[in-house]
Length: 165
Image (tube, rainbow, N blue to C red; front, side, top):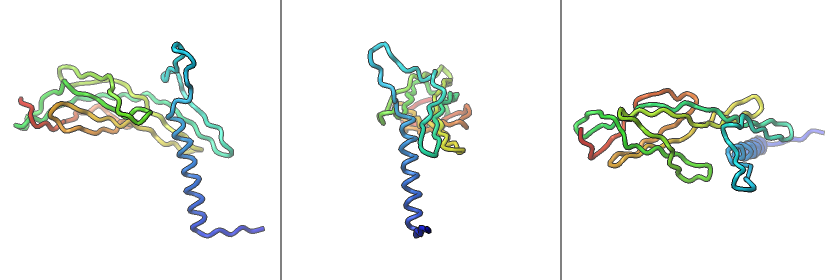
């Protein structure tokens, strides 16, 4: 028996499979354990891997600690660059809401912390995760950062309208 499918049918089927895989991957980033009492907590640092058993395909989510460091500088109205010390770091939480991160800069505008990335393994392929971070400071334009496994410490300059030297 031969089953004939048009190119459009094959493309549609492939898109449907891709959508199903994306839905499975979204489950990896969503908390799956609901504590039954106030004392039960899932420590994300202790989870190394989550595997999803599917028919014929393997999907795994690996949590990776990624160093996130750098130096924040303001560019003043005169063009001078000075250390940024009143910076807020924001990320999108698992619920989709903005979440203030507990990151502080020192007197030189330097910060050094760790973020958790979620890498997805689908069969023999790996989809590397990232964290979208927004830097905010009064009278400055927000600065969008993408923190992934290629992040290296760097100087980050914010453009500010009312900052003096």
